[in-house]
Length: 94
Ligand SMILES: [Zn+2]
Ligand SMILES: [Zn+2]
Picture 1: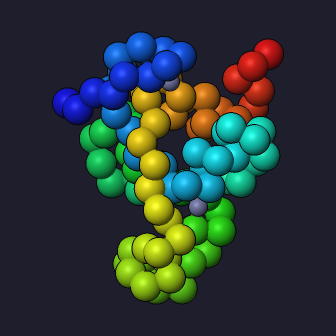
Picture 2 (picture 1 turned 180 degrees about the horizontal axis):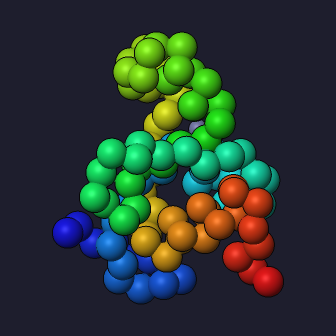
C-alpha cells in the first residue's frame, strides 16, 4: 500500500480525492462526497457532487471536462476520513 507523510497525521495510507473535496476540507465548505463502490479499497478514490454530475454526463468515464476538472489531490488516510465525514454532513472537528 502506498503511504504519504501528512503534516497533521504523520505517515498514513495514501488516498485520492478530487480537488474540490480537498479544497472544501481546507475551507470548510461542503461539496458532497461520492466514490466508486466496486473496490475492496477501504478508501476508494472520491469526488464531489459537481464532479459526479460531470462524470454522469460522460456515462461514468473520466474523460474531457470530467477529467480536467477532477484534478485529483493526494490526502492522507486520516484526512480522507475527515473529508468523508465532513462532506457527508458530519463535523470532524467537534
Ligand atoms: Zn470535484
Ligand atoms: Zn492527514
